[in-house]
Length: 114
Length: 117
Image 1 (cartoon, rainbow over the protein chains, first blue to last red):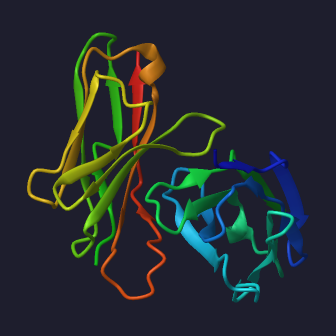
Image 2: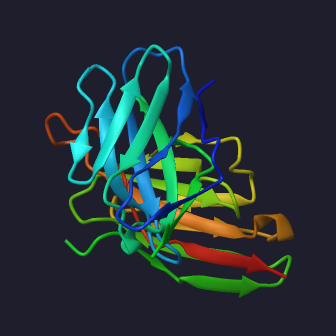
C-alpha cells in the first residue's frame, strides 16, 4: 500500500528565513512522481513543485527546492527567503507512474512570522 | 484557461437529504478526479474519469455516492441520504494525459464544503 507521512503538523519560520518540511512515503514501486501542493486558507490547492523518481537531480522552482532521497523514501521541501504569502497548509503527494490517483499526506501548516 | 471551478462553494443540508455538486474542469483536460478532505487530513481519492468513462472508484465511495461525467466535460457528484459523517470538503481536480512527458499533475478546484446537520 502507498502511504505518505508528514510528521510535522505545524511549522513556523521567520520572514526571509529558510524552512524545511519533511515527507516520507512507502512504496514498492520504482517509477513514480512526487509533488508538493500548497493550500492557502480558504483557497484552492496549487502545485508548488514536482519530482520524477527516475531523476536524480533535485527539482527547484525559484525559492522552492526539494531534497529527494529515493533509497530513504524521503522527499523534503525547502522554502528559502520565506515570505508572508508562503503561509499555508503544505501537502506532500505521491502517484505511481501507471496510476491515476494521488496519495496525500496529512499536511503541514506553515506559519510565517513577520 | 479559467481553472477548475466547483459549484456550490458551500452547502448546508439536513441529514437524509440528497445533495449534488458540480465540477467544471480545465477545458482541454480529459481526466477528472473527485477527492474528499476532512479537517486535518489530506485529500482522499474518491473516483476518477477519463473522458466520460468512470475508470476507478475508491472503497470510500459508498453506494450512496454516485458520480457522472456525461459528455466528458463537467462532472457531478451526488450524495444520497446524507449523513453527518459526509461533512467534508469535496475537491475536484483535472489533468491532461495527452501532453508528451506530462506527469499528469492535477489542478484543483476551490472545493465544495458540505455541512450535514
